[in-house]
Length: 95
Image 1 (cartoon, one colour):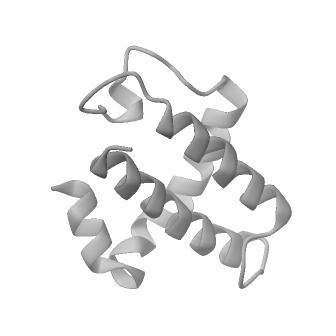
Image 2 (cartoon, rainbow, N blue to C red; image 1 turned 60 degrees about the vertical axis):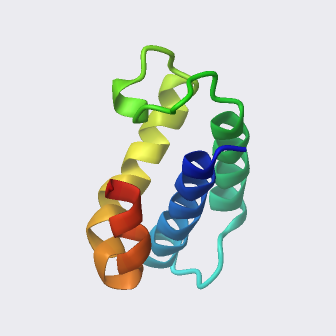
């Protein structure tokens, strides 16, 4: 697996923990968030583009619309908090 895809999966996992804690009031991932993480990690690992572009700008949509909307909700909630909870990971993600 490419380094940037592994970093993206790690970032997604951290975002899901923040999201699940804020929205579902869980300290760990609830079954629905865990299932979303497993699904997304599987899709990201099979990305045909090297280097992988941002999903928003990718010509190939790996996720069906309902999954994309779930991931957008997670990112809308967790992305602003990532800088405070995981600053180094956030900076690596954007560089």
